[in-house]
Image (cartoon, rainbow, N blue to C red):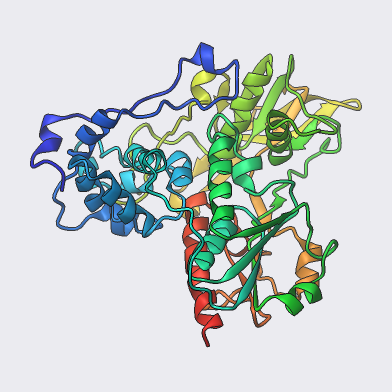
Length: 470
């Protein structure tokens, strides 16, 4: 695919980010948009792989990446979009948020830099919106069936989109004031401009999808209400119960879960009224957790004017290059730095939190260095003798992931069973223990990537359609 030998003529080039001093003063997107001509050149680097691992091994959605790249190289943008949307409902989200496992699996990446697949995807979908390739017409044929989707996050939106295009009447319920879930409220604006979310939601409304926001199923409306009015129900509420850190001093003021912090800032940016605001201005901030949510907290705290930001990770520092235990085409174990890490702050690895200290409000985080042994999933750690250290902190943000569905009232109302991990149990048809109630995304799988939630949404929608046709 692409230009024969193109990867020998052109090196990988990415648009990059806005200057640090400029971007930390606002919440506007940090990533620069790719240039159409430059993207065509990058698409030409795609090789004629005998087996395209980017497609089969890397992409959770199974995007037909080599063919898309070839169409972009030829300037056939509409065809590229048609092929992309055949497997991906919302490329504008995945292209901005996905860590690009497709690029990690790119054959060119064995001994060179991989193709810029993510940037190519951004250009394809933005070109489609700009040129009017995307239809806003309501599907002509209707099945005469109705489905309620609970949760307007990545999985729920995909389920609704697929069902609607198949002729099912869909109503999406969400407890928040606006649809989008983590896309709107959890991910900072500097990574995903909410105008991109609004554009897609508005399009879905024009195409026939209904939204009822500010409605909590289980309290505002009952399962009986839904059962009487819909032929099937899909739970897509995500994994909402955050992992806590039960150490001495946890009850001190100034210690918050990361998502509570990020949601408040996103709501402020949107002009919504925010009670009990969490502000890092002038404070020493400690973020506990080294993942994407943790780095989002780092970037947000810097923009709020934090005096100092330190991110702690319990695991050891990854190697600079791909580790031998994760060879190509596996997702590599290696050091990754986000745009937020480029903006400032400190990162500490192999750091265990022992306790929080302070009077009424947190003042210090007391930690210890850890020594790790083993490899892969069998690693063990022990505290390093004499390695205790303290970090001043007036704000601590816990970004250690999520442990369960966290929707006790909804689960009780619907009567669905949970598995040992606290997630909703489904069978091979994506159906829960209650006939006619399906579940999709993180509520089933536990915390995962946005792109995986969307892929699961497509599978769930297909099973719902099969159920409705019986």
